[in-house]
Amino acid sequence: MIAAEGRIILIPFFILLILAFGFQYFQPMVWLYRLNWLLVVFFVFCLYFFRLPVREAPEGDNLFISPADGKIVLIKDHEDGDLGRVKQISIFLS
Image 1 (spheres, rainbow, N blue to C red):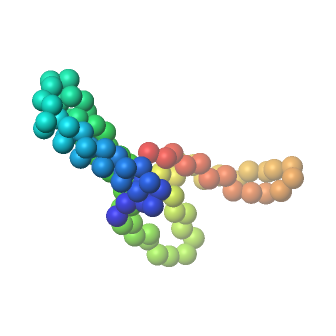
Image 2 (image 1 turned 60 degrees about the horizontal axis):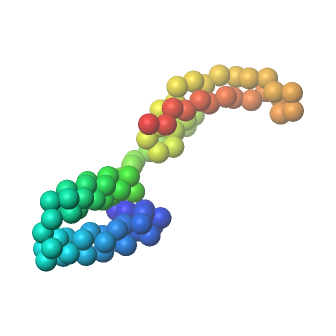
């Protein structure tokens, strides 16, 4: 699956790739060949970036689940002047 926000970028980019390789077919140039393959690498990176992997959250009570692919690195109680006693949850997003 691809995120909806990514489709706005990926669809025009894919059309650009088709046009660029079509142009390269009729006008073979070394620099255009290299540029097209650089665009392919960038397109594949965009596909990877906008992917929506299937995630399954563990079930149970009293669980803290980190968003996306993050990792919970610290959970501690904290005294706040405005809110009172609160829990601080620090997350490292990878």
